Image (cartoon, rainbow, N blue to C red):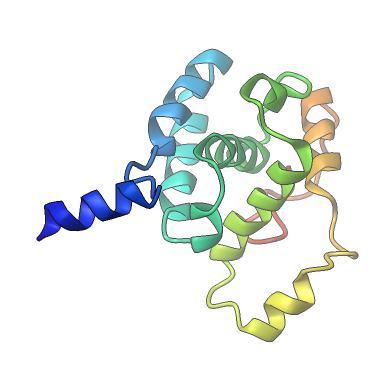
Length: 152
């Protein structure tokens, strides 16, 4: 019965294989010559993001890059300028994925809170913060917790 279901799904064009972002993350970290603490934190963030349907709908390349971006921000590690372009990540999509991962740490997000956050007009843009981190210009505020206020 399972074989027949798979045949029907293949005939209808359903993709039955899913590429996982973890192997990509390891390759990205190797290319960036990331320190151990960045590897550990980005891996933890990526594993946590696996429970999010918002992250599941995004390409694994983007999820891996977002985990690195968030971990580098939290650890205040400087990465090369516009490093995400090496991994074919779009700047706006990367920022949206970072926000989706950060939302996991806000606890249960009610639908009305989610709708209120959709504009994000008053929050700092992840892309601005990524460029500050890459250029070595980082503010002196205390280290951020894993929330939507995480600075990149």
